[in-house]
Length: 579
Ligand code: ADP
Image (cartoon, rainbow, N blue to C red):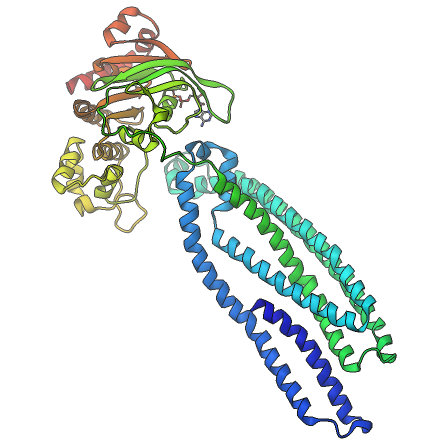
């Protein structure tokens, strides 16, 4: 359709020229017997072509909308699928986050726009080529001048397109920061502290600062683009006017008919108009979207978790997990967080990994869960390197109750069932209520309006919220819905009140009877009843042993214990009450 519309516009120039010449011939005294029939045919042809040229953009718009809807489905499938598969380390990398932020939002619009730009430009090239051929047919040099005028505009438009995208890149970073401040200033998550500390103006000022820089950067490039393109359009207009004056000469010499002259002049002015506005914008957009496509491809090239290769282990009986001299630093830092750490976790025992904040405890869990795999040393599962197993299999054996666990605005039932999905477990109502009572949520769930089917959180109408401790118990329930063999608890009591802490210890005791448990904490109350305590110090195991052994040794653990004695005594009391 685009090609036909381009051709139609050129045919219109010729038809109009013929029509004008025929009319002039008809009315001139020398040709008074001119053919009225051919004039009518030309009028019909012109009207037909005009109708097609008029209908084409409307049809094109309909097609563009259809294309956009299809693209939305495609982008959701492809981009979300990719996003779910990329390596975890990317989610903690600022540059990749910026890339994702540039690629994911409104991808369907950008891809459709890119395709439509190609079509627009193809149509434009056909139109220009047609005008040049008609011009060259009459006078070659005018065609040459018009052609040479277009070349610098092309280059200018491409350059400004790149500049626009570079600005967009710079602005994305600023916009992400501004969005964060906007979340703090208006988001629900921060509402409580916002009221408490009354920091609204302070954060607003920070938001405004980022927003202003982003706005000014955008405006600067916009103005530059506008000035450049307008200067270019003035230049083209002058050339256009000159060529229409110069074309009078061939008309006077009889090299060009009057009809062709009038028709061509009209076409040249139309060409200037298109060149100055639409074409510059199209090329600018095209370069812009070409840069977008580069980002799009970089996103699709991001490394994915390797799921398929490797052995299965889930059906095997879990025997041991061992760190052998493991060292690791995060990709964005040279500093080693783990320095040759070695320890063993055996089946059906209770472990504690303790250490001060920042000593590398959470990093150990991240390595076990396979979130990072570029470490030195070995992690062995049942005596075999974990890298030999399929990642999904490791994910089935190990589960974790993380410090910053997720709160899903789903029903209580779905919140728990999520934990059984990867095991394809069918959990009936009896088992579900068993799990709920094991984590001590039975009475809370009973109080909810729709019981297990109550949607939690405030994202939905009638949603009801849980307290921090209740959410944590729900996370534990989610873990119980799965068939994992080891559960890691990362700082489980850090944010709990005494009653919630007591409830947690009860759940822990229950889970310890079913699975191997590893509690990671800087609080020592939980260590007393574990079979083995590992004390992490500067990314390595400083001490290990049972509670009594470590206390007797009077080393780091003893010192930490003494310094925490006041709240530790309270905690131990609560913990002992459960045993
Ligand atoms: P712990 O759980 O013992 O408090 P972590 O394992 O969370 O400590 O962190 C150990 C160290 O690694 C800290 O100094 C922390 O700043 C650093 N760290 C944690 N996550 C990242 C990350 N994604 N990128 C860079 N450094 C990190």
